[in-house]
Image (cartoon, rainbow, N blue to C red):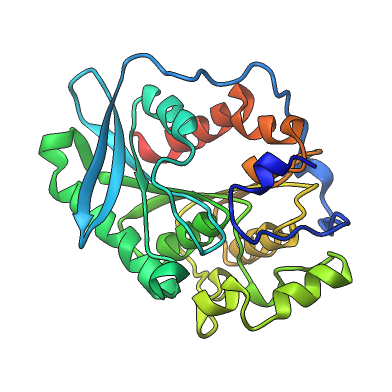
Length: 294
């Protein structure tokens, strides 16, 4: 197990066993080649750091260097509801921006600020407000907005996409959709840890706030991505949301990555590299292309 990766989020817990995916259709299983990797620096992209969008909260914004108007993608980082670093996934955000998008990495309030889920959603909406309000300055198409998040950020991306009519597409990487079933399929020790009332999930939610309960006809298209060896968030979570969206007549695509873990918190570098592969980021770019461009 990669102890350096484990130290990224304090107090993170892993299940000793992987959770089985109960999907009847195996067509969503994806074999990802971890090579080639996205570049460390994407050419033709400008980065603005530390833009204050509300009350001391900041975002970083990647935009294409060529002047123009570009669809907006708001990225919400993971961090176990304890932290939300705006610099997370910088390589991935720059890669997407190079394909013709304005991509913002947004910090939001967490349990460290005694925040709850509604505060996080309010921060995501405030970031959209700020960026749309500065559309002329930053070269943004205000009528083309997507939200993209991973883990805790994927949960907030789903909540934001299902409650903000400006959002036209959602990318959710291994985010929670039903907080009552967050440890489905994991070992007993993990289930006990998650059931503890002091777990960040319970401190962040206060009351039920599940994306699956907000699914409605007319919801924006979703791209759901999860590793089948994720030991932190059960793959059942994205499956439940996928099924709810499909049942409501929505547009939902879900891929289960064979052998992949929980992003940078995977159990090995090989697992983590799937999430920064050109293959996977191209899937995200193609999804955004379908739903954010004319």
